[in-house]
Length: 120
View 1 (cartoon, helix red, strand yellow):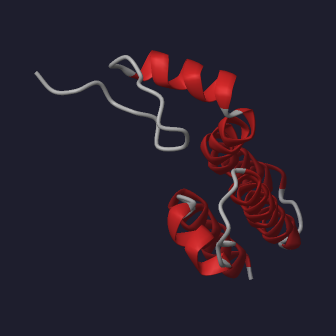
View 2 (spheres, helix red, strand yellow):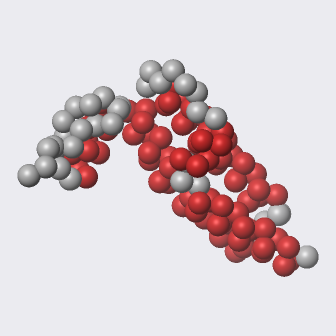
């Protein structure tokens, strides 16, 4: 049998499964837990903005402002979490973008650009 998994942030031993890991993250690392929730929710919120843009014929700047706000909020929160966890090195914006999982936002942004261009 393999050894119990350990938390990558503090090294504590964890039970197998996602539930104990999420409970540990929420209890021991609340800022990292909030950053994880933001990463999971942000693409869906942006999708709601894009769908509202399409359904209600909103101005073309609405999805662009939403995209900038989502990226800026994600960068700020991830930097704060990285600096608050005792990590001496500050992640660059490029590292945050690669590690941030913003692929879904990029697809939604591409969709909104295509729709804005097709509207004329």
